[in-house]
Length: 144
Image 1 (cartoon, rainbow, N blue to C red):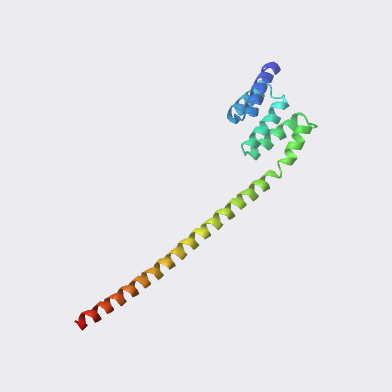
Image 2 (cartoon, rainbow, N blue to C red):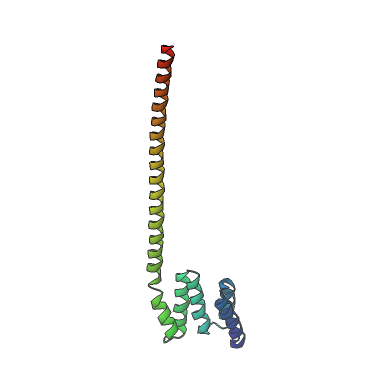
């Protein structure tokens, strides 16, 4: 449990986070926390990684832990207050996707119904044409 080894793990985790390798970043940041539970930078970055993964609840827990260690930590305070708006944005985005899917489904069903209507009309016209040809054929054979 040394600050030096915690900082090494923190730096590795930070590099993984910057490169987008979030799972490895989480692993190293958690190791940094295990080696020095009072090193608040690890909690702050871990919170940001969780946000990138869409895990708002875990991110908020990290920043709350930072604030228990360092109540005046500006980074944790700002991240915690901005994370409150994220669920609404996620819900709004989800709602937009659902509306888009609904509109596409309505368009698809409408297209199918219109196609069925056209097929029915076409069958009726073909049947009518076939009846006319049959009637015409029988009239011609009766003339013979």
